[in-house]
Length: 268
Image 1 (cartoon, rainbow, N blue to C red):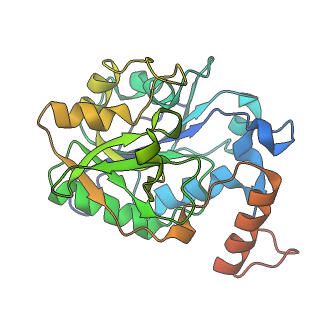
Image 2: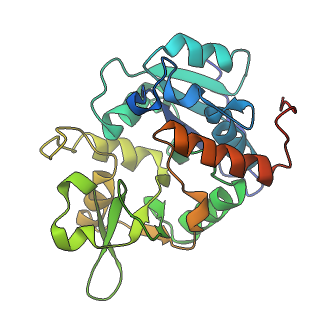
C-alpha cells in the first residue's frame, strides 16, 4: 500500500477523502478481467471514478481491491494520491469498506466519499452537490437517489409517511410492495469517517445474501438519531449499471458522447 496519508484541505479548509470499491469479478461480464478494468471510452471504468473524485476535491483515494488485485494496482501505479487495501473474501459492500478502516485509523474524523468502481457515469458535479448537502446538513451520512423506470437490481429507497428517508432495502430483501418503488440507490455516498466505521462494526449479515451491507449504515444512523441527508435529483441516465457486455457497450457510448471521444482517440 502507498503510505501517502498527507491530506490537503479544500477551499473551505475541510478535508474530503474517497473510498472506491473495486474488488469484484463481475461474473456476467464474460471476461477474466476484474470488473472495474473493462474499458469505457478507451479507459478502465475505474479511472473515470477516480477522476471524478479528484475533480470533486478528494485529497486521498483508497481503492479496495480483490479479484486480480495486481491488475488494478498496476493500472493506477505511481499515483501519489492512491492507496490500496485488499478484500480477500467477498463478504459484501459493508465488509469491503471496512477493509479501509486501517487507512483512516490515524486521521481525524473527516468527510469521505464512498463509491463503486463500476460506476463511471458519476459526474464531479454530483459529488460536489453530495458534499455540499452533507456539510450544510451537518450529516453523518448522505446519499444520492434517482427515480428510474426499471428499478431491477437496485436497492429501493423506503420513505416514511411524511416523505422523509427511512432506509435502503436491497432487492433480494424487498417485499413485493417495496419492489414497486422506483426511487433507487445508485451507490453515491458521503460519510463522516468516524461514525461510518463505528456503525460498520454494528452491521449484520442476517439478510438474503448473507452479506454485510454498507446500506445498513443509513438505518443505523437514523436509529442513533443522527442526520441522514439525501440528494434526490440525480438524472436517471447517470446511474446506468454495468453488469454485462451489452450494458458495457451502452455506457461506453454515453461516455464517448459526453467527452466527445471517437473510437480512435485514447484518453490519458
